[in-house]
Image (cartoon, rainbow, N blue to C red):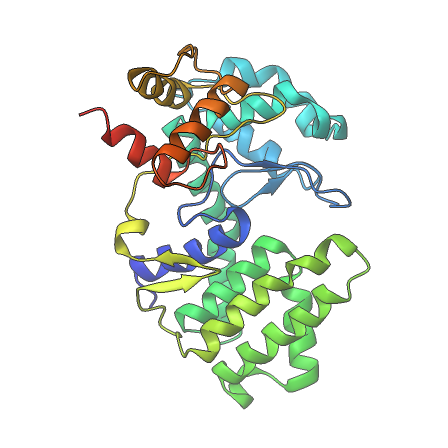
Length: 303
């Protein structure tokens, strides 16, 4: 039986694949050219074309505690269609990013992913007699990215079932079959995602079947502190500016440090310039983005 900590670790691996962060980025909005899912959103990037985005947003809006439901409800018919022009609707994308600061949205994403992706992955793993934490993480990744059943069948056809060749051998074969499928897929947008299989292969080669902590996945460390941390979105300049109380908090901290900007809760060019200068003055990478390192350094100077 997989433990709660192992489940968090398995999900953190896929969060890193999807958004580069252990806890995921609940406000991440991405449109990749050629991606058949079109606009994708949140911790594990549910997509517009699959209608998973509609189901998530609908569930959020139906929660009486949702702070942004009034702003989102008018978009529901377009999301349900789905209206693919939403890929380029900057106001909509900005709204999606902003609502990620609402704990109700974070909970909605967690619940949706558990019901529609994690639980089915565990069930599929059980059918294939996969019991290790890493094996279940591999199934979860396949379910999140898609074509889990297809790749499982390909692996069975080529190498045999796990009960005959052993779970660890089967999982390794599955990862290699999936890597080949991604690398040679007719959808060229999938080619670059072979990094997911390379990272899983590293865990396999390192014998991390129980996902014992700490782990490093694609240069990101996973430990109990990072798994139990508080989610804070990555703040940066986007075509439709990010807005929210978290932006205002950073702006106020910059003002308190002497920067001549306005704490209006809108991450504009002036805020980016101030962040870059602060990063240069404090030995941080001057990329103008407010992640954990910049946020912690900036806020710690207020005392």
